[in-house]
Amino acid sequence: MSVDDIWLKGDGTRTATVAATHTTKVVEEKLVSTTKYAKLTISGKVTVDGITGQQAPVEIQYQTDRGYWETRHSLMVPYNKTFTVTVGAAYADRWRVHTPGTKNIGPSTGTRVIRQPRTRTEFTTVRIAPRPVAKGQQLTVSGVLRTYDTAKGYAVYPGQKVRYCFQPDGSTVTQEVGTSVSLADGGFSKKFTAQTSGYWWIRFVDADAAHLATGYHPLGRVQVTG
Image (tube, rainbow, N blue to C red; front, side):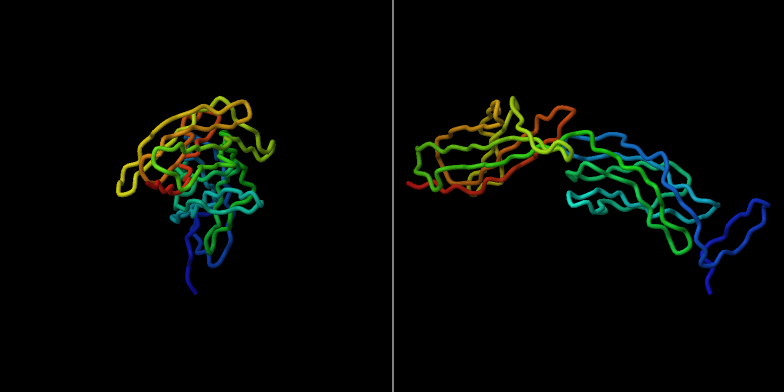
């Protein structure tokens, strides 16, 4: 038999507690900040009904589109003290702070949902053609920029700058080679004169405070012949 922890009772006496469960609760959880690349800073506190030298295992979780909670980041924090943590990018709308507990300390209950305030953006129906393409001929990149909200669904996103990037074969440098603005239907396109084979990307990075950026969206390699 092993003693998991020592608990200080209200009358000042100490009692060895073996395999007992004590209640924890996550409180004061809130979103401190978020970036356009979906990096979130979250703060909170894990309370416990006693005094312990242990630390609380904490999981920062997001809800998938299918309704499951997945852990994005795990850490250990002191009980009854405010913690702050920054979580790497994950394009999800609903987050929570959860503690699974330990052998003698129970898991948290009743944690509230933290909403990502920025709306997701994405590219769809993206096309680059023709491929292959003869040197000196026109190469067209096109697609649609739209937003996605779990409550409202998809919507086109007009008036936004789309950036076009290219990396020639044999190079490690990706260059921005042009921009265009999405139209009323969210559509965008731009023509380029084919010069050399290489890899293409598009980006939406000029997001305002209400939206997320897409980062790099790969279009693949285009072979230039002749």
